[in-house]
Image (cartoon, rainbow, N blue to C red; front, top):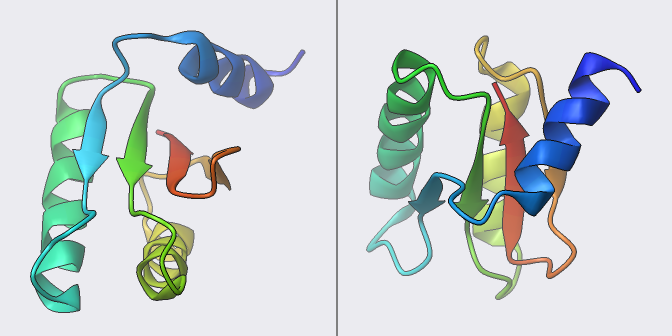
Length: 91
C-alpha cells in the first residue's frame, strides 16, 4: 500500500474527519473562496485529509470543486465519495 492509498483509507474510516461544507452556499464565488480558505486551514493544521461536502444536485458545484482541486498545489489527490455528494481530499 503506497502513502496516498494509506491516506485515502485512513480518511474513509476516520469518524472525526475535518469537513468543509459547501452545500447550500449562496453563490459559486463564495463557495470557491470558502474552499480555498478551508483547504489552507487543513494544511496549516497539519491534517492529511479532509472531506468536502458539495451535494449532488446538477453536479455544477462538484465539477467546479474538482477543477479547483486539480490546480491547488497543496492537494495530493482527491476522489468522489461513494455517495456522490462529497469528495475526499488528500493533502
